[in-house]
Every structure is written in C-alpha cells, then in structure tokens.
Image (cartoon, rainbow, N blue to C red; front, side, top):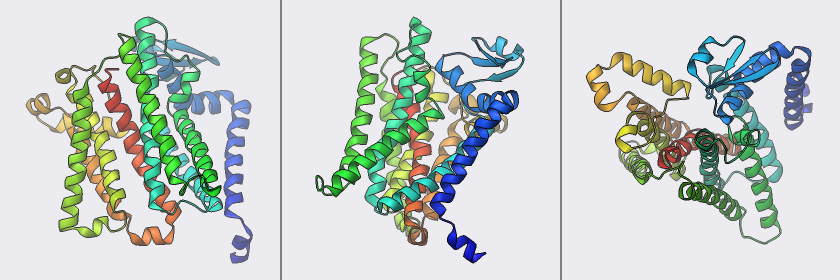
Length: 377
C-alpha cells in the first residue's frame, strides 16, 4: 500500500477527482434530467439563484420548464419542484464539502507557487472577503430596483454571477487572478512582496463596489442611507474583538498563541455577521430599515428555538435573534483556540487557507447583511 500511495501524485489525484465529479453531474443531467438536473442541481442550487436573481418569491420547475411565482400562496400551491431564495440543508452541506475540496486544490496551487505560509497572505486576502459581501449587495440592490422600477441595475442571468453559489466562484477567480498578477509582479522585482499589490487590488475592488452602491443611493430613490447600522455594527464588532483579545491575553493567553492578530480578525468578522443579523432581524423598525427574514439554516433554527423557549414579553422587548451573536462569538473564539502552533507547523498552507475560509464564511455574509441594512435594501 505504501508503494502505491507513493506513486500517486496528490495534485493529479485532486484534478482527477474534480473532473470525475463534474463529468458525473454533466452525464447524469443528460441521462437523468428529471432526477439529477431538476431534482438536485436545479432544486438546491440553480433554482434558488433564479428566484433570487429575478426577484421572485419562488421558482417552479415542472415538465422541464421554469416558472416564476410572485406570491407565497402560489408557491405553496405549486406542484413539481419549487425553489425559494436562500439556503437549504442540502445546499449548505454541499457548499461545505465543495469548500473543503477547493481548499485542498488551492493548497496544491500555493505549493507550486511556493507561497501561502506567511501571515501577510491572510491579511492580504481580507479585502476580498469584504468585496465578496459588497458584490452580493450589488445584486440585492439590482433586485430592489427591479421590484420598484421594473428595471434591474444588472439583468439576469448576468446577475446570477453575484448570487450564491456562483458568487463564490466569481470572487474566487477574481482573487486568483489578483494573486497570480501579484506573484508575477513580485518575482519580476516590481514590488518587494506579493502581499502588497494583492491587498491593494482587493481594496480597490471593495472600494469600487461600495462606490457603486453609494452612487445608486444618490441617483435613485430605491436605496437609502442609514449610517447608524454601519456604525453600530463596525464599532460593536471592534469592541467585542478588542475585549476578546484583552480577556484571552490576560486570562487564557494560550488561545491566541497560534493565530495572534489573525485571531482578532476572525472574531471581528464573525461578530460583524452576528450584530448585522440581530439589527436586521430584531431592530429593523427602530432603525428605520426594511424588515428581513433569516436565510441561513442555523440562524433560522436559533430564532425558532429562542422563540419557543423565551417568554413572549422578553421576545417582544429584545427579539429572538440575539443568541446568534453569542454563538458566532463563541464559535470564533473556539476556532482561534483550536488553531495552535502545532496545526500551523504541520500544515502551514492548509491551516492558513482554512483560517481564511473560516473568516470568509462569517465576514462575507456579515458584510452583505450590514450593507443591505445601511443602504436600506
């Protein structure tokens, strides 16, 4: 067995597995279109994108055709396969599997480029996480314009590139292109380190996206501007991250040994997500922003359980989404504690990428949530 494993190139095995999985989906979609394409790919992945991108309440797949439905009653009475905007348990688990598999592939790429061990790599990718959340907000703004004026800012299916799960691929390829350009610039001596242009490109992409949202808020009546949401979210997350750092450094310093200031950013990013959700779901009327409903499975479950266990008077006073914030903070601190020195020593690139992914799954949605509320989308 050892001889066989030694002869297998892990990178080639990864490519072979990726090609095999894609081939199986393509062949299955043609051979069994109702079961594989309609019942799996469309139902859990493309259908929610169609419903979201067109501003519909749901999308119906029946007889190999797609219909868009605009009312909850129609969606409840619809036959065939019905997909609503947002995530399901199947799609969430599938994204997790694809994420881990993709991380392995990126590790092979980083090994080939001989980069990815440095902590500067982590910080240089931070702007791209903000960019991903802001880009998703652009699609939200486009849908809002469609519902209000009848014309979207970005027409579907192009807007599908900014909706989950396709937006992950969009941001990934933008980041990959920026990384390759930055590495090439560093190796040609144009910059001292590749992290500098990489961070600069990500910052420019994020700033451009925010500028576009600001332009829409000024030139249209569809978007508003509620700076209190951004202030509470960002200042609150900064205070929580700072207190978490001070507290752990004083009482449990071992928590931060492996990650250092990277851990502070992880806690900050997930706290942004937690605060943005609480404000959007429980304090919308007080802040003068549109009311929202949870799209994530975990968030929905927490709200449902809290509503069932918490007295109604308390729910009316403080809402039911607040435990999500503490879950996010606790989970982030746990992750920071788990990423000790040994993990980084055994597999520095994979550990670094996994930490990037952990921050991204919190900060990306969090950025989208607080920007949506800030611009009243």
